[in-house]
Length: 255
Image 1 (cartoon, rainbow, N blue to C red):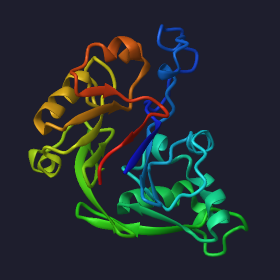
Image 2 (image 1 turned 120 degrees about the vertical axis):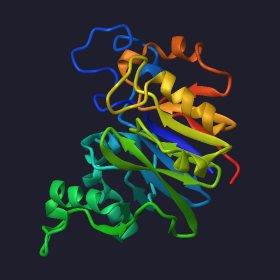
Image 3 (image 1 turned 90 degrees about the horizontal axis):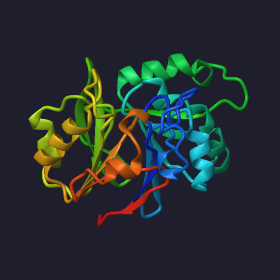
């Protein structure tokens, strides 16, 4: 299994428009963060988690020529806004894109991309095949996916586990029964917005507390804002088994 971090930034990305802070002015490529998304590659299967506003740029940067499915964690704009650009994959694959989402997410997709779901669609609109998921295991082709129910302030959303890898973004609370699904996993990714407390995201200390509970072999932090600080400084403050993810980082995990 190969994981590519397509984006590791928060909803505004880093740098943030018009900001003059040290992080936004940094010349370190690891401080340049597009909106959060990952690509999971298992053999010849490519699964995307979330298609944010930077989806097109991320696909071009990583030279992704094949995409088999998209999983949506939730319906906030920074996680769904790039869905229109699946048209390129529709053209190359000659089929609709398999999209896995909860019913409330599907409702948002049908609202935001109404033209793609019209009875008589305009030629060239995205072709989408919706699959309804809930908090129980499902399959993308032969790959089993285990959802993880987390809370994003008052909004219930999903993280996802496959094999020895788990991805959780936009969370600020996870029940112990959900954490049991990933206890002792090889690799986990979890959001850590900044050092100060936030209403709907884990801050750095809270994310490290969750990692300490789960006890993964390796953990990566994502969905990072400019207020977290410089990548090089924050990385030096972290435990040995925890790293700040950055855009373009690719990791391999035994399946």
